[in-house]
Every structure is written in structure tokens, then in C-alpha cells.
Length: 212
Image (cartoon, rainbow, N blue to C red; front, side, top):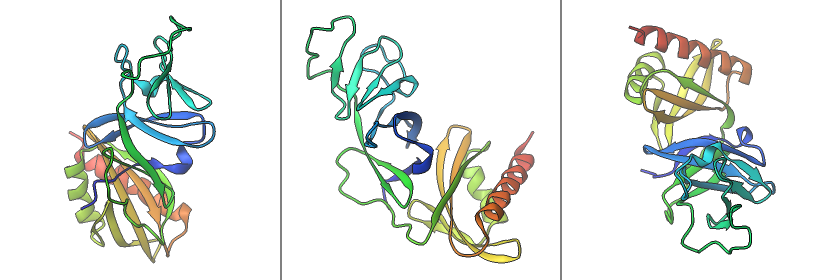
């Protein structure tokens, strides 16, 4: 089983932006530099612990929103505003994870992971959608509501009936405490708008059944 986990769709993280992600319970900041390079770090500034996902991208660096400490794409601190003439010690560095893109999906793994992310050829990224239930509850609901989906590397894949058509679907699950984000990819069958409406309807059904 792959250690690579989907953290978002490539189209949802344009250049010079940063987002929060989760990898097996670890909070991460995932950001794309102005030139398009991806980085994934533990979501904690080495200075005071502020979330780096609250920071802002300047060119090829990410700056913490608290005191402006700035880090390059390697994770090393490059600038400390309170000491502008000082070269930051090499020990001041963000904790890095592996990050790559494949099939329009942003994948994250532990640093130096030698494996490759899942092959999702034949599927096109559609959208991400958050369901207000935990991962296990969502898996149980999907087993009942979309039995054509079966476990595969990185998520669930299979055939579901959408608008009267047998449609190939790939769902990448990203659990976050009491909610789960689905990264939805579609293959042959129904069109993107129909798949999107199906996903919204499925979300409402699952949340309604789980409501107290």
C-alpha cells in the first residue's frame, strides 16, 4: 500500500499560494512558489510555532505571518526581519515532506519515501468536497450508497450509476478529525456537471443520516 496521500487538486493551488493539508494526522503547509515549485512542510514556524499555512508567498519563499521569518523552497530560513544583516543559522529550517503532482492531484509522503504515488491514468480531476463525517463513517456510507466503488491505492475506484450512465469514479479520501475531504476524479460515463451534482447529493444524504 502506498504511503502517498492526496492533499488536494493541482488546479486549486495556483502559483504564489499556500494551503493547509493533513498527512496521517500531521498538519502541513503546502505551498507553490511564484515559479510553480511545490513544497510541503510541517505547519509550524521554527521560530514561535505559528502556522505557516497562514503565511504568504513572496517569489520563491514563504514568510511566516507572525514575525516575518522567511523560508526558501529547501525549508531553510533565508531572512529574519529583526536581524536583516544576519545570515540565519542552517539549523533554522522547516520540517519537509515529499510532495509531487500526478494526474492533476497533489500527493504527499514522508521525506525520502522511495515509492511513487498511485497511477490514476484515465481519470480527470473534478473537484474537492468536504463531508462532515469521519473517515470510517464515510467509508461505511459509501459501501452502502456506492457499492461499485472498491478500495484501491490512494482511495476508492469503480463504477457508479449517474444520470442513468455507468460512470467511472475515483475518490481520494483526506480525513481531518470529524470530517473527510473527497478529491473527486471522473472517467468515462457521465459528464463533469452530472458527477458534481451526484457528489453533492451523496454528501447531503450521508450528512443527513449522520445528524443527531
